[in-house]
Image (cartoon, rainbow, N blue to C red; front, top):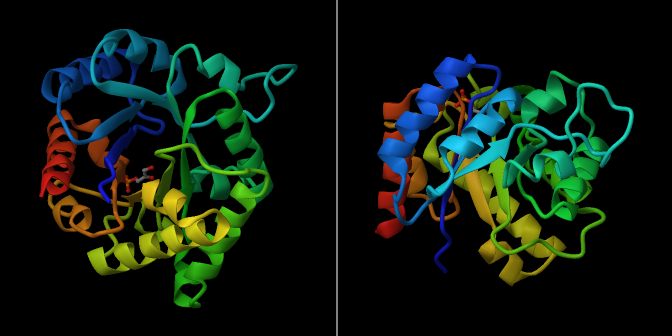
Length: 255
Ligand code: 13P
């Protein structure tokens, strides 16, 4: 079955406004109209309006890096899915930096996921194990725990749902997972989705790999049968690198 791969650029806590606008303009120039791949750019929250304006009418989508689970209320400094819905189409939920740096629990991630789906936005649900969890042989158990919790209150997944498998030890370290390791984990994620929902849902779900993806490493990763694109951090801050990654994913999908 052919799934349209998804490449996300997670800018994290980087760029000032001028840099963001320049990068968005460059990405539009190099990537607008690239076929066979869905592209989502996730700048820092203050630049989401700029991103929405500068990418309007292009084939590039805008995503937020985070969301608050409550729809509205006295939550100073937060953004709800309802607020984001006017500006973005996608939201990263459960990124490992949210889980491990900001202490988000599986329950919080599940509540955020529900709020994003309820608002009609498209989540990129991030999961992944710590280095010590992998070394202890717990990778599948961690992925199962994260997915089970995230999906607990859901009757099904919308078509084209996106899970990002991001092993924490590979993020920002330069230690890209080997294609074999990434494929094995993404296949496990897919079979867990089949167990929880059904084969059709599992087949339709896009599973990205994330963690030190570069234009060089993405070629082999994108060739794996259960890897449907990439979630890119550092390399998404450079227009040439991100363009090369997106083009490589589109080429792999066309094979
Ligand atoms: P790096 O590509 O910088 O390792 O970051 C990956 C990531 O966390 C994307 O969400």
